[in-house]
Length: 531
Image (cartoon, rainbow, N blue to C red; front, side, top):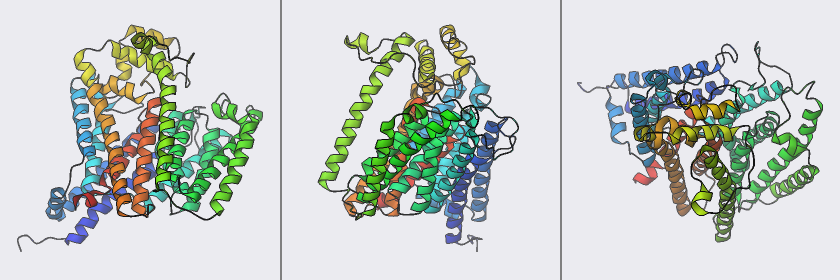
């Protein structure tokens, strides 16, 4: 027959989905773990891994489509329903392309800065991956979460060993700022901005593989204390608060969360003393970070003991679940409002200080009142990097304000602004490749249009998860089904990553993971809404 297909419809559709699922699992395994020559070319190795793995996935889909003569593929595209996340992801890709074309440094915008590779090519390859995942309707599975949990546990164990001079990997050249299989200490924090919320959520609120998640969560506690970056505390805080809000009304979940926080506090109390005593013999990193200072207080011991004991009592008691009652919702909204007010209280003086240092009109000039309680630098020089980015923006023309100077072209533009160079040289020996603040970095690289598109896809992903969550709550009183758990987990990851980005940056490790998370979030609930 003329239209006879080589493969059956069910086989073809299953094959499309399997190829993309294997791709996602492979990325979550290879990106954090793969190394070829140690830390020497680790970024290039992971960059090539993204390009090659995505290319193999795409070729596999094309071969399957050719065998099927594009029969099922056409029907899958016809059934494809565009959501708001898709719109912003497409706008993001269009803006990136326009930014690259108009960039004064076209080659740099195409490939990215050497050692970073966050140029147009990487973004476009991952845009292709996003589209393939959406068309093939890839959703998260228990197996995928288990893979991510185990891999992150391996990363933590290697990192802990590194910090105490026990080198499990045969790497010849080592630096204090490089750790485990990901490298730079800030890069590994970016990786945990994606996976740590998954680990904590699965221990606190998950119904599958809880024991494994609990063990890895404990290992992650130890790693976060000894690794040395204060940024990790932000990830822990956001993930824990997100789980707390979700756990209100769920006695067992609250107990497990208290146990985890209590364990972290007790581990910090003990390990801070171990790190202080062995800083010249066993511990290989400096002790000038918050975990060491925090762990020196005896109140940490008292609070940790109290939380751990109380958590055990709650977890062992009757597992009461009343998360959708009116009282539980009132408490959740109250906690959210208090946290929002506190966030504004913290953010206002920081923004004021940044604007004043950059020579831009601030809150004090606009309102006549001072909101600044902050003196000096914060976050190991992050104030300096952010101010440098604002200095670049202050001198932008209209076109570059809209489209930026090109993907990953922050350093190129910085070198062309004398005031910014002079400001940075007083604090750092090397030229900055980003502002250590994603909004400022994106404004410089991709302009207002790019920044709006970037955060638009994050907000759209959050909005979709919230909307699907409400539909599930309206249809059923059972809130901890696998699908409902996936929606809440994806929601927490996106929020955690977006907040962490305020003090960090995208890399070839964390950006591919968050794009896949957004694609899976966009696929959640698609059938329910289309009925």
